[in-house]
Length: 335
Length: 261
Image (cartoon, rainbow over the protein chains, first blue to last red):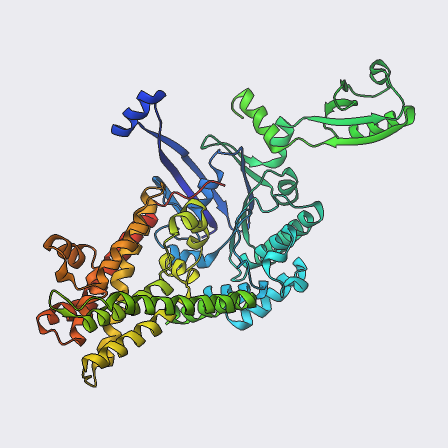
């Protein structure tokens, strides 16, 4: 068994009521309902190998969470086959959950009112982890995530960043070979994000932990995942390397400049550059924006050219977000 | 065995949570005790005016009432799931429950325990001893054992109804007012069932077995031999109904739709 996750023709349908318009419609709804069957996940196939780190991305409502919930045994699929860690998640739920760790960014695993270590202690019992295993493994986790000083504080007194690190540690108490992370860095500051990314990389290396994460943060994916599965309207529209996705769809890089003294657009356009950059003036923010292909050292060339001619107040390099990539793909059809 | 140890783990977690708020903790105990005293006075005042009710004496009715309080207290301490739909289904807490290797109903129950309600057992015992003494009831050596079995059986019957109703939430996420209504119907079990008409009696025995929480088991201790068959059926009814409700729950979990983020 070298596959951690195998998904075949997986489908999940939700039944939803579509209401008729008007008062008359409301009365008719009372008697006969119009049900509409909406497929949230539409016949998808993929496999994830052991030790892989995969980003599962897509716009809101694309079916990411629904898939994750089926993979973790929370939801029962309408049709299709799932084998995760060699088991059917929903059928053998209680045995299965021993082998996975789950972090839902917006939901807490920890007991709100009591110290973090008490939550850990209970989870340790829930997952039947022995003292040696716990000490051996968690000592390291606690040290790497730097949560030692937080252990005796009640969860409600922690900041979001502190809590997320504790959540992550809590999901790893039984050292699962497979980890599901749903928006693990949502709302966190850069330092915490970096710490979490470093940590995930480390456990992946040390224990060969398979990680499947959903995120809206391109930084997460770049730091962690070589492989990206992209979902739209319940279907997989891309499954492959992150780099080729970006090469094809995020070719435009935007650099925003703010100048101390007023500058004319044509002055910028006539700057000597070995490549073409499109300049646009943004009246609302009083900034000038250069758009160009993302290649080797173009950004540094651009910035040095601008800086040598004008005094600048601020520079921002705009990273293409996942949403924009998805939108690009969506607008132009298939990958 | 694992489940027994988990039970105590969760109880200790619960105690720790309670002890976090010291003032709150003492206030709650005080208000619970006060609540029970009010209950007690209320019963004595209300029943002070009745003498006989279709063949039951005042003391007997008080005894049944007292007995009812005991399974009811067990039920309310361990099956505090009246807000299951809001808390676990609408808010999606069920997601978290389902990612842990313990039966989902067991986890929900353990997370919601409310041990303060056990004070009701004390009140119930006081009432039973008070009315039992005035009735000159005799106790056989095995009666305390039967008492525990009947009380647990009654609590299970009570719990079964509420677990089944909580499971409705898996099928329909609309708010229902069935829960409060059930609490009302549950109160009928505190009085002798033969004061009601036949239909209500049938319902309280075989459909919503609230009569097995109060009058049926209590009538054994009151030595009402015509009710013995029902009294001894209490643990069986409790187990059967509870098993069915767990089955309904398990079916419901398969239908769980989850909540969006």
